[in-house]
Image 1 (cartoon, rainbow, N blue to C red):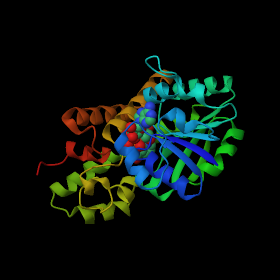
Image 2: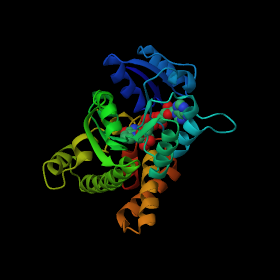
Image 3: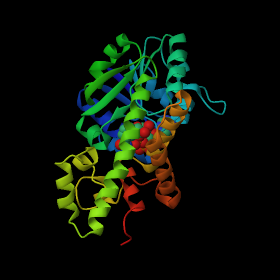
Image 4: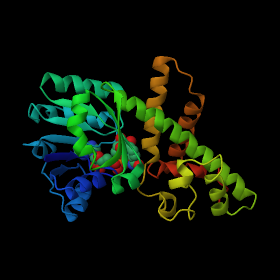
Length: 298
Ligand code: NAD
């Protein structure tokens, strides 16, 4: 299958590589020349522009940071035409970025007018899941379009859920990430408390992992450096899932909560804590660096 892949960052890069390894003809593009160079070195064909990448593609996948990037890619900006105009009718668009559900719905409606099927398919599983091809996809859109996408999604993920109509994948994703944001702070607090009392963080983490406090952060993503060799914490909080991306997701959750008058007190507090952490200059670090807020200075 001929696939265009736009956005080759921490997640998109390894996802694109898995599609190439599965034998798909891939044409990829990212605004960052450095990122393109890295992927080209791994054998991915890089197009000169997003418009060139989608020429003749049967499936277009995008993995961009936020709503505004997806809007400007597909609808255009500053007089530049949007990609939607360049995509052939009959093509399937899979947007895996985590963005506002309203933007996903707008894209699906605009696509339908041109005969282009669009699904929102945000992911969970972190960069480790993207590399291993074990991501969870949360899909919003028509069931028939999900079935068209399934063989492609299966090369990048292990779990594929249909959440509902266009935008529903995004709603599921922000519920999940609100929970993740909260539990990373809770895990950080518990570890910092134990360390302040002289406990060995590796021993404490293992005790909690196998007890009733066990969670994804303790399983795969310990926030304290040195506890887990492969976690971003042990690599200077580089790569992974940026604090500013988590802040974006918690903001989306709060906007959504306001719209439906839901009570999300811990989600609101978590958004404020990540915002303070970002303001302190840590926005580009992996979100598990939020432990710095509660950790005793070295
Ligand atoms: P990233 O910042 O590492 O990568 C995004 C890439 O998009 C960058 O390389 C950037 O240059 C590129 N880009 C932006 N606008 C573009 C455009 N118009 N055309 C082409 N390229 C463009 O971000 P990421 O960590 O890969 O995250 C991508 C999305 O996935 C976000 O919505 C994020 O919330 C979500 N997500 C991330 C993780 C994670 O662990 N990193 C996990 C699940 C979901």
